[in-house]
Length: 295
Image (cartoon, rainbow, N blue to C red; front, side):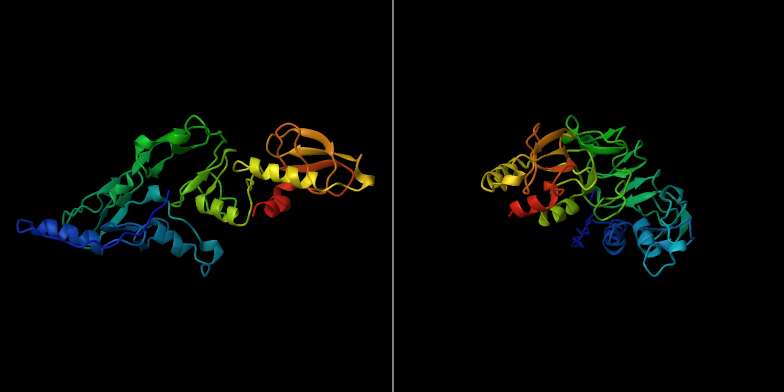
């Protein structure tokens, strides 16, 4: 779920606006970081240092110049102390400052120790995930087997993969479960960042990097390969040669005619296959041939 930097809004104050209201509005503009607009900082329980938010801590403590043995993430649920950005009072975690009374975040989660002024993100806490999500509770459901909240749009269609989000993205290797970037749930049930899917498509890669199943409808590509094979007869010595293949899409094995262009699954007509037994050079249409056909 993505987070975006907010523009500083202009402040318009009516004649009857109180000084306290003005202070709150100004504080909303002037405080926070590139990740969140808020009026407090956190004291990290792991290193006892002060940061604007957990992302600021994690970026600083996992930088390349940091000794690998000293790199770490902040345990968000263990944060106990915050510092008000207006009066610098350090205090126990709460939504309002005990000294000046300012609201330190319009959205506040006591379980995650999380503050954010931008409630347009429709934040909500999922007890089963154990963290706060964005997008509105009414728009998501928690899949117990996958171990994460998914959009209601795929509630009856998604393929469950146990703890599907509790691993690194297979493209960029960022941990997915609490990533702030948009995540795509592929038809096979595996998950990667949406922008990583687009990057794969730009490089003409259309198979899941985890299980090799096609990530989109490839029927038009398979028809083009049918035409290419029909127009590319094999030499006489190969006309009766067969090989055994495994289809990455339907997982069926088939004995098919050897052809240098690729092998078509006899069950689902996919060319996303690999040679598993037989003569001739190994051929897999899931990579190079598909990349050549899709222009």
